[in-house]
Length: 301
Ligand SMILES: Nc1nc2c(c(=O)[nH]1)N[C@H]1C(S)=C(S)[C@@H](COP(=O)(O)O)O[C@H]1N2
Ligand SMILES: [Mo]
Image 1 (cartoon, rainbow, N blue to C red):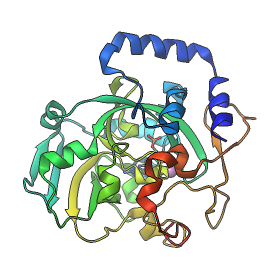
Image 2: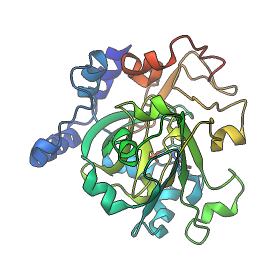
Image 3: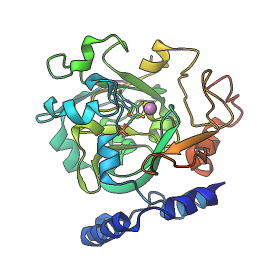
């Protein structure tokens, strides 16, 4: 299954890939292109991933604070003021406080990670993110021993976010991870795409990316991170608890109550693009399956 996926991605337009490889050479040492070299099949699969076009990644978005159509975020998210930006780190940490985005960037190592993004709506993309490991940020704040979960919150700006007028979700958008998921080396805070600052519609100036979970876990434009000993509420789970669980790991064997999760539609493949099989943990099974050992993934969906 993994091979079919890789081959299909390689069949895509080589022009964009050529431009991209060229850019990677320009970026030199900063662009390793491989998140976890040497971690077996997952890393091998990742090396072979061909990213979607910049166009696809930045014009087809989910960011409901700016509207529910896929084109709305690109149209309206420009209104979001992303500088200055402060991330409040609170709860069970040794060094709580308001961290300026620039200070975070100075302290972090920016890497490139080419990850699959699989939306719960059954479409997918491959995105070349730039960002840093969330673990590095959490360690900077000093996680206390009793902490078990990490809660995240998106900016709440009614004057800049037209979508907040509609009660689609209980705003602000909130998400959460178990601490071991948050500390996993695949989990990043993305600050760029294709080597440029991340566009507003993709979650500027920094957004979570958890590649083995459905896209809605990857919360955008984060203003608050709270370490806690209780499982935090999450926006989609509050909106539809039977449809969206806390874990929301990509799993082709656990269907959404209203549609199959066995396969997906890669964005950028054109109108008649074939669907491709969805991979367990979105292709990151080797890296993350151990986090869920002994858990019933149907009950903990
Ligand atoms: N704050 C916020 N974060 C969000 C969303 C949102 O509506 N609001 N949508 C989520 C969903 S459903 C997906 S699939 C991804 C999409 O990320 P992208 O637009 O960068 O592809 O962002 C996630 N993060
Ligand atoms: Mo999504």
